Each structure stands twice: as structure tokens, then as C-alpha cells.
Amino acid sequence: MALPIMQKATAVWLVDNTTLTFKQVADFTGLHDLEVQGIADGEVAGGIKGFDPLVNNQLTQDEITRCEQNPRAKLQLKYNAAADGEEKRKGPRYTPLSKRQDRPSAIAWLVKFHPELSDGQVSKLVGTTKPTIQSIRERTHWNIANIVTVDPVALGMCKQIELDAAVAKAVAKKAKDGMALTDDEKLRLMSTDQSLSAESRVPSAMEGLETFTFSDTASDTPEREEALPDADSLFNLPASTDDDEDE
Image (tube, rainbow, N blue to C red):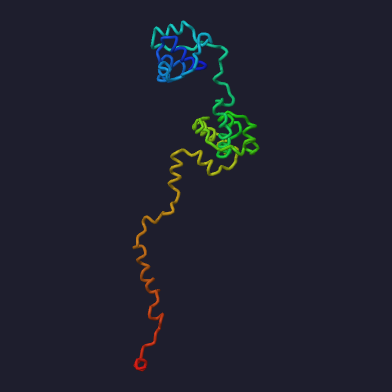
């Protein structure tokens, strides 16, 4: 479902100027019901000025009136012919201003741990440009000395499922082109069941010792005892005589 622009500001206006239910406002703006209730209580969106959806051609008064009379009705965003195809637009991912300073760290992480990803894939994951990626790959970035590698998933720049899909696609393309896969790349393409079964086949340093008993060496005991020299033969002391005792 298409959402209005400035969702939270639009929700503020609808809460202040209509009798729509929290559920209706939440469904229309893409917010949670409790978040809309927080707006009504003054606990959420403090300081945000309401954004009038009527003036900005996103709603009509008739639509608002219809939903006010029927709490189960859902607001319908006003049709805008100019917006057709906007959701299908391709290009770099938009990165909020608050996270743009972390973008080099995310790029450095992807370049280091997933070198199989192309510049185009990295660009889509974190919303950057190819020259920036290239400068970090070649370590010619102006701030390369201060860049710390950080997982883009941890930074909230992309989802883990998106990263996994990009890596699987890159490794599969490499295999299709006839290039040998490394052990790490093979492991990335494994399913969970496959990876667990592979780990179970790894030999342990203690393998075989769990069934070891002292009885296993019982047969060797007689031979070892025969191999030991007699203590007396080592010294080979002469027998004592009476003459020696007299002296």
C-alpha cells in the first residue's frame, strides 16, 4: 500500500484535526497504533508540525468524512498520476543524513569480508557511489586512516536477508563463470542443515580417546616387563668374601 509523504507529520495533523480512530490513522500513515496513540497523548512526535494532507493533495475532505462516519473504513491515498512507477525506481539506496558518516565503515566491511561483491551490489546495499567504493578498495580514500570496518546490518543500512541474497548471487555468478570457489564462498552457499552436517564431520582432537581404556595396553605389559633389565645386572657387584671381612 502506498504511503503519504511525511508520515509522522501527517499523522500529527490527522490526530489534531479529525475524529479518525488511531487504527485508521496508523493504517494510512504506516505507523503503529501505539505510536499514533503516543502522538495523541503528546509523548511522541513532540515538536513536529502537522502536515496537512488536504493542502498537499494527498487526501480529500470527502474521504476523511467517509472514514469518520465508519470507523472500519480505511483512508485511501488520493491518486496521483505523476507518482506511477515511483516504487519501481531503481538506483542507490537512500541513506539518512544521520547514518551517512558511517557509510565508509560499512563499505570497508563489505570490501574486506565480501570481496566477491561487485561495486554495483555494494552501492545498492549501502547507498553509495562507485568512486567511493573504489577509493576504499584501493585505500586512497581521504579518511582511510580513520575508517573502522563495521557490519552494515549492525548500522541499519541494509537487512541481513538482503546481504545474504547479494552474496549468494555474487558467488553463484563467479561459479557460473568457471572461477574456483574458496572454502568461505562454498560455506556461504550452504544451507543451515548442510553447514551443520559439515561441522559434524570435522575430526576432533580427542577423537578416539573417549573409548580408550587401560585394558587396551594389557597385551603389551608382558613384553614391556621382559624388556626391562634386571637391577642387579646393572651394578654386577662381586660377592663378598671372608678375607674382606677380616680386613
